[in-house]
Length: 215
Length: 225
Image 1 (tube, chains in turn brown, orange):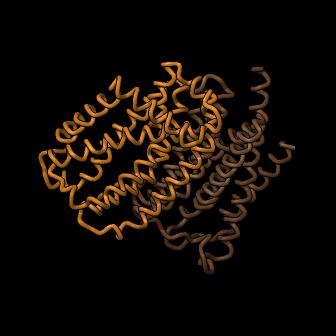
Image 2 (image 1 turned 60 degrees about the vertical axis):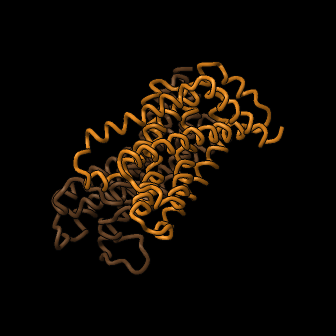
C-alpha cells in the first residue's frame, strides 16, 4: 500500500517537473527563476495541511490514548517541518534575485518562520522527555496549542507589517495567472501532497517498528 | 468543594508559600532592576533613541522576569513533592490550572507594577498619560502570557534541560500576544486613544480565550506527570 503510494507520488513529481519546466511559460519580468514557485507555494500548503493533521491526531491521541494517533501526529509534524523548511529555503533562493535579499521581516515570511519554530519545539519536547509515553502526551498539548495559534500568528504579523506581493492564488475574484501556470501549480501541489502523504506513511511504519523493537 | 473553592485553595497555597519564603518575588524583582542597568548600558546615552524603543524594553523586562517566575512555578511543586497532592485534588483538574494561573498572574502583576515604576523613575516615561488604557492592555497581555506559561511550565518541569526548553516553547507561541501588547503600548504611550488599538485588543481577547480554554482542557493530561 505504502509502496504504491510512493510510486504514484514519484510519477506525480515527474509530471510536476514536466509541467514546471516544459508546459508553464517563462515569466516575463522575473524570468526562469519564477519557476521555483512551483515548489515554493505547494510546499507551504502541504506543510499547513500536515500541521492540521497534527492537530487532529493530537486531539485523537489525548482522547483515546491510542499510540497510532500519536505516531500519526509525530510523522505529520516531521513532514510539516521539512516541507516548511523547503518553503523557507526556496523562498530565500527566489527572494535574492527578485527582491535583492535572502530574507526580509515581511509579514508572511515572519509568520511562516514563527510556525516553523513552534513545530520544531513540538519535536524537541518529544526528544527531551525520557519516558516516550509522557513525551507523546506533552507533544500532543504543544501540537494543539501550536496549531490553534497559527491563525493568531497570521493576523498579528499581518497587522504588524506587510510587504509581500499580494496572493496571486486563493484570493477572491478571478485569478490573474494564465491557465498553464495554474495547471502547473495544481499538478505540483498534487505531487507534493502525495509525496508528503508517502513520507508520513513511511515514518508512521518506521515509528511503529521502533516502538515494537523497544518494547 | 466547588470549583471556585478548589481554585482559591491553590492560589492561597501559592501566596502563603511565597509570603514565607519570599524566594521567587525577591529574585524576580531584583532581576528586573538589573535589567534596567543592562538596558541603560547597552542602549542608553541617546535619549531620543531610547524613547523610541521604550515600549519594547518595557515588555522585554516583563517578559524576561516573567519567564523566570513562570518557569519556577511548577519546579517548586516538583521539588517539594507537592505534585502528588495536586493530583489528589478532588474533581476537575481545571481548578488546579486556574489556581496556578491566578497565582502566576499575581506574581507577574507585581513585577509589572515594579517595572512600570522603575521605568517612570529612571527612564522618564509618562505612564500616567496612558493609564486607564494601558492597564487594560497589561491585564489582557499578562493573562495570555501566564495562560500559556502555566501550561508549558507544568510540562517542562518534567523535561530534561527545562530552563532551555521552557522559553524555546513559550516564546514563539506568544508572538501574537507580544506584538499586540508592544504595538498597543507604543500607541498609548504616544498619546493615542484606546480606540486606535481596538484590533489589537480584540486579538488579545481571542488569544486569551483560546489559551485559557486549551489550558483548561489539556491540563489534567500534563498533571499526570
